[in-house]
Length: 126
Image 1 (cartoon, rainbow, N blue to C red):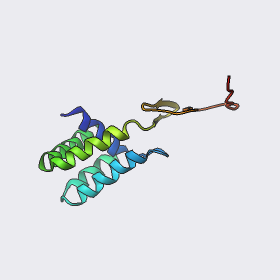
Image 2: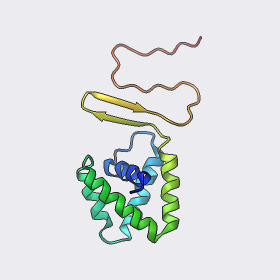
Image 3: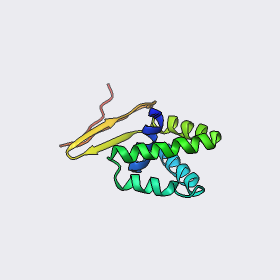
Image 4: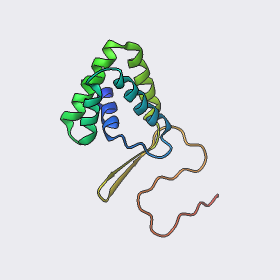
């Protein structure tokens, strides 16, 4: 299975769009719109969203994305373009008390990602 489709399926299953994640939100919306046109595909998405940590559900959703991409190459190209843009956005994954912050892309100026902060944060220009 294509690793890009697995990554997209994982993001769609979690459907947790962090604040400011405009492109990830667009990706989720576009897939929902496309799946609304094809009977049965929305059920696979909903099933994966009920158990987003189940690798079998993610693989099933990736398979549906693959089939949809094969049937509509223009949608496949759009899906991959949206993913390339969306994956550069901030992703914050919460797992119990462990918080992993990932950022890729371009940040202009001051940028902070944090999990838990005790006290405060001060920005000092040097």
